[in-house]
Image (cartoon, rainbow, N blue to C red; front, side, top):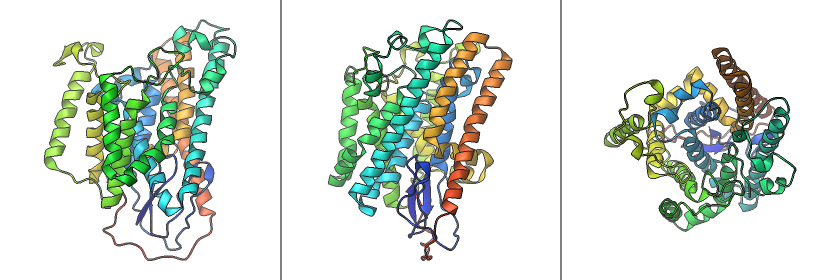
Length: 415
C-alpha cells in the first residue's frame, strides 16, 4: 500500500497503482484509480486531529466566548496552534515528500507553489475582510482598538506592507507562518537527502538559539517584537512533523507503543494540565505547583509547550483505538472532514471570529448570544467541510478507472 495526501493535509492510502490523491480545487495528482474496490487503509487520525484544532481555534479566537474555557489551552501548555503546525508538517511530507522521486522535481515544485498561492490568497481575503469590516462597523458603533491596529484604520498606505508580510495584524498571523514553513519545505527535503538527521539537527539548533535570544525574529511593522509566531522557532515543530511522517512511511507502521513512554507522556500532560488550568477563573483554589513563575512563551515556542504537543501527538499516533475512533465514529468522521478542508475552514472560521467578536462587543455577551454564536459558527464550518468533502467525492467518482493491480500484503500499512 502507498499513502497519498492532498495539499490540505489529507492522508489517503491506496493500492500501489493508487487512487488519485485529491488536491484543493478538485484537481488530482497524476495517479489513477483501481477498478476493484478494496478495504480502505486510510488513517483518519491526522485529519481528525487537524479538524479538532481548527474548531478550537475558531472558539479560542473569540475572547468573549465562554466555550473557550473548555478547549485544550485550559488543560495544558500547548493549544490548537501547536497541533495545527505539527500536523501541517506531518501532512506536508505525505503530500510532497515522495513527490520529488515519484512525479519529478518540477511537478512537485509546481504543486508546492500552487498551494502557497492558495495560502496567500486566503491570507489576503482574511486581511481585507478584517480591515474593511471593522472600518465599516465603527461608523455605527464604537470599536475597540484591539480589533484593528491604528496603522490599518485609515488610508491604504499599509496595503503593500501587508501584502509583503512586512505587517502582520495581530489576529491574522498564523497563515503567514504556515506559508513560510511550506515554502521552506524543499530546503528541508534537500537536507534530509544528505542525511535524515541533518535537517532535524539544524532545525533544532535554530530553535534553541531563538529560545536563548527571542529577539531573533522576522520584522513586523505593526509590532516592534516582530512576528508573534516566530518562524525561526516554530519551524522546528514543523520539522518534527515532517520527520515523524517520513519515519512512519519508512517503517510502514505506526509509532511503537512503549508502555514506559506512554506513562511518561501521561505524567507530563497531568503536570501540564494542573499548571495551566485557570483555577481562579473557575473560583477554585490555585493548585499550580509553580504559580505564576512558570509561563511558557508561545511566540518562540518554549520547550514546555513543545513537549506538551509532542506528548499528545505520540499518544494519539501510537494508539490503535484512536485510529478506529477516527475511522468509525460519527464524531471522528466529522472532524476528519473538517481537517480535509483545512484552508477553507480556517479562512471562513477566522472571518466568523471577527463578526462574533463584534456582535458580542455591540450587543453584549448574554447566554442567548453565546449559544447562537457557537451553534451557528460551528454549524457553518462543519457544513462547509461536509459540502467540500462531497464535492471532492463526486469529482473522484467522475474520473476514468485504470486496470486493477495486485493489492499489497495486509501487513503493509499507511503512516
